Amino acid sequence: VGGSYNGSLSFFDLREGNSDGKCYPTSTTVLEKSHHDPVYDIYWLTHSKLGDELVSTSTDGRLLWWDKKKLSEPVDELIVKEAIHGNEEEKVLGCTRIEYNQEPSPLKYLAGTEQGYIFLANKRQGKTTEIMQRFGVTSGKHHGPIYALQRNPFAPKFFMSVGDWTAKVWSEDLRTPIMQTKYHDSYLTDGCWSPQRPGIFYLTRMDGFIDIWDFYYRQNEVAYSQKVSDNPLTCISINGSRAALGDSVGSITLMSLCKSLYEPQQGEKEEMIKIFEREAAREKNLEIAKKLADSKKPAKQTSEDLEEKRRKELEAELLDIEEKFYQTVGMQGGDGLGAEEPDREERKDEQDYREPEPEPEPEPEPEPEPVKEPSEKQPSEKQPSEKQPSEKAPSEKAVSEKPSEKAASEKPDDKEPSDHEEDKEQSEKPEEKEPSEKNDVPEGSHHSEKDKDDKDPSEKSGDAGAKDDDKKSDKKEGEENKE
Image 1 (cartoon, helix red, strand yellow):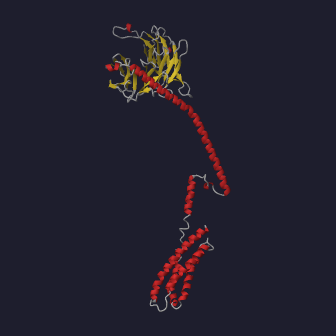
Image 2 (cartoon, one colour):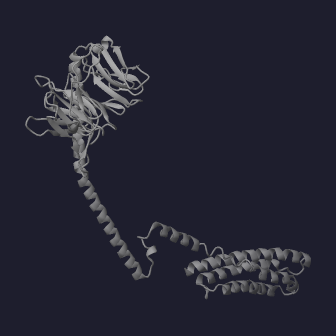
C-alpha cells in the first residue's frame, strides 16, 4: 500500500506484475472519503488474522482505519483535535507519523504531529476512539514536525521520536522525555532502533550523514558518524546486517554493518531496561517535585501580596500622621523623619552652608587703619612725653579703647557687651600698658629721638596686630555666648 499526495491510498500486488517489471495499483480508496492532505504514514495492523486492516495518517489531523476488502470508506476515524493551552479553543493538529506495536497493547496507537507533540490513542472495538495521553505538552516537545516515531523492540514501553535537531526517548507513564541526544549541527530527517541491539539507534541528517548512537556505552556522544550522500537523507531501514538509506533525489544506498552493531552483548537487554527505568524514575521524581512547588507557589504569592499591601497601608498612615504633626508645630513636611532622602541631604547642605557664615565676615580687617593713624602721629606727640612720661600711658589706653568701642558699634546683634567681654578687656588692659612703659624714656637717656621714632612704630604695629586678634576672638566668643 502507498499513500498519495492527493490523500488517497493505492494497493499493489507484486504477484501481478508485468514482464517489464512495472506494477500498477490493483485498487484505490475513494477520493471523497480519503484524507484531505497528503498521506505521510501507513501501518499494517498485525493483530488481524488475515492482515487486511491498516491505519493511515495525514496532516489533515485524522487517523483513518481501513479494510482492504472495503475501500469505499474507512472503518474508523479519529481527529486529533486538542486545546494545547487551557484557555485556547480546540484545534486540529496535523499528524506526520504513527506507531503501532501489538506487544504492549493491540489497541494503542502513537501519533506525532506537525507541532512537535505526541499523542497516545486507544481504539476499542465498538467504542469511540479517544486520546489517553499527551506527551510534550508541558515541556520537552520538538520544535518542528516529528519525522520518526518508533517503539523499542526490546522494551515496547519506551519509544523514540526524531524531530528538529534531536532524538528523544519517552516512557508511556511520563509526559516529558527521559533521555535525549544533544543538538546536532544539521537537521534530522529520520531514525530507527536497531532490531538486534536494544541500546543502538540510527539517525539520518539533512547534510547526508548517518549518526549511530549506542546508549549502552555512552549517552552524551555519537558512537559513529558516516558521510553517505551529498544530498539530504530522508529515510532509513535496518534488516539484519544491512541498512538501506534513501535521499531527496530518489536514490537508495545499501550499507553493510559491522558485527558490533548487530551482534548483541551479553546482558545488554537487562542493562538497557534498567537504564530506561532509572531515567524514568528520575524524571518522575522531578515531575512530583515540580507539582509540589506549583501547588505551594500560588499560596505563597497570595501571602506575600497581602503582606506588601499591609506594609504600604501602614507607611501611608505613618506619613499622614507625621505630616499633621509637622503642620501643628509649624514645620515643613520635608524636615520630618519621614521625608525623602534627597530632602534630608538638601537640608544638611543648608546647615553646612549656614554654619561657616561668621568666618567669612572678617570685617575687622580694615580696622587697623584707624589704629595706624594715631601711631603715625604719636612720634609728634611723644616729644612732650619726654618731659611728661606719666601722661603717655593714659593716651595710649584711650587709643586702644576706641577701636574696641568701634568694633562693638559695628556689631548690630551685640547691643550690650557680655560679662565675658568685659572680663576680657580688663585682662588685656595691663598688657597694653607694657609697651607704653617700655617706650617711656627716662631723663638722661643717651638714645636719640630718631631711634625712638624707629622703635615705636614696630612695637605699636605689633600691639595693633595683637589687638586685632583679641578683637576677633572677642567677637567670636560674643557670638557664641549669644547663640
